[in-house]
Image (tube, rainbow, N blue to C red):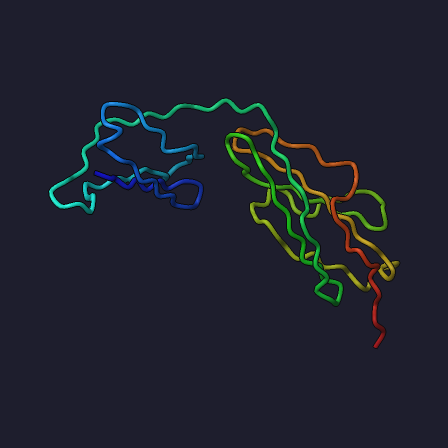
Length: 173
């Protein structure tokens, strides 16, 4: 009596089990997903229970209204040594889900510069040009904003959400 729906969406698959007997003759929500070309919902007729099969004849898609921008934050900056920092970020959205992030960096509290734009990753390695003038004894700040599938983009916070904590000390050979 349980049917398993496989929802292919946004680069992943989600399985949802539905008790077909308890939910017959009524609509049942499979959840909220972002669909683009090539995405699909699959349901086979195998229930795993002897003598029972699944039958269905209708699906409905309801557009969701989303006017609220998502939020994002830098959650960790790890010093990997030799002028490399692994930066981690994450975000949340109330409806359509986070589609991408923008991450900015600043050196010694100066101007913000775009580092990553419309990335779908949740971490990356920031590499400092240790040969650049004034690279030694610099501290780097990071901040992020998110964009959702409805096109809403959050604001960057005014200050760094995380920093490289300790100034970069270049080891001379």
